[in-house]
Length: 100
Image (tube, rainbow, N blue to C red):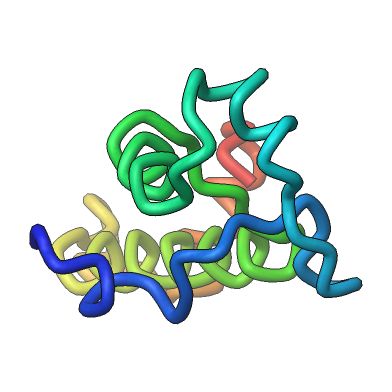
């Protein structure tokens, strides 16, 4: 996408978005070599890292664990009893193996 308005809510650059503090031109110039906020936004989008909160990270991890456990329980059976493994059994095995 080349149109920043399709990707961002604003092209303003913040030093602290929760407090509503905008970055000063001098700080942008020092950090990015330009005070043009659109150019800085493009740089951040192309080369920046996404910051994810602990809550979001934990939700994504739980979703991934649930998805893996579901796939394993659907595709694997106990070799002796020929019964499918339950999600709880798969999750316990994942914990024992250090994946959770």
